Image (cartoon, rainbow over all chains, first blue to last red; front, side):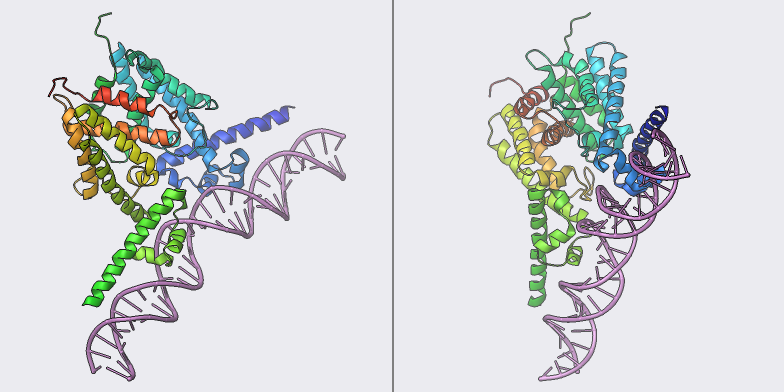
Length: 197
Length: 197
DNA sequence: TCGGTTGTCTAGCGGTGCTAGGATTCGAAT
DNA sequence: ATTCGAATCCTAGCACCGCTAGACAACCGA
């Protein structure tokens, strides 16, 4: 019995190694450089080993994406819980989101730019993805304003952040003014009551 | 003399054929299906001919992108000029933009998702790209609100639209509620004075 | 010790973007 | 009219891609 358990453990360990190596390689040289050959060489196994863990490259991207979703959710929650007041919380969320995208471009790509074979916004959406959206909803749901569905509001706010993140990173927006754009977005989109606490 | 002119004309004609065929193929089966072999076969020339017109596949994508930028600018201008009042103009702009992205997904990808080797938001940005941004600016600059730079405002609004367009198309936002999200965006972002004309 | 399962690797398939070099065509000068 | 030279185009091939079949070796249980 214990032998099988050990093997299972080692197998799981190797799977983590594959995902971590893929992520590392993608972060260093971009996803184009993550080929099955290079990846296999880095983990010091032959190519077919990859296919005993994942259906293909797409699933490896998906695994990195799920890892990233959990981290993104944690980063957003950490930032919002440290802020006082709704306005500050929303601003903190926006900054945390964009900082995550900037600091982990490859992971962000795996999540929202590449095809990782994951279902989004559906019944069978993986839990980490649902939870990442939930993390946004927790803060944004409170500033949607009267008569606006919190879910739909969060989707819209998220889309705006996503647009900023992607266009900025690929040099399609002039660099440097990100801060002002975020402020504008938060000021206009978030409805914060002025009543003192 | 006239012989050389004819040859030059035929060459330009063939270049148009390449771009049009690439676009058509991408729109039909996605950019992944646009391989140099398939493209060469469709235009009934051999592969190397492509490389006598373009440096590589990237430049072909770029050519499609420039074509698309002109069409996008035209679509936006047509929609906004037909609308009465600032609020309606902004809404028309948003709808026209998203409709363009939905109806020409491959062109939209060439413009804003793939690498066409083009410079964005810089001195040497190709004219069609600058003009497409100008088309947005013409309408959005008027509803930026006091103390907000029109350019920066337009960039932010554009980013929001881009986020909606991409996330919707890839199924990362629940389909069907696009209309409400656009209304939300326009209502919150556009500053329209209520004074009657 | 043996048999069978499990695991891994080598080798290879069809595809990709791209290019070197030969063949052919064709205008122009003699 | 003929020949030369340049421009044009194609065949063939390179290195790489994702992925897989099938041979081989290692190991566990009987």
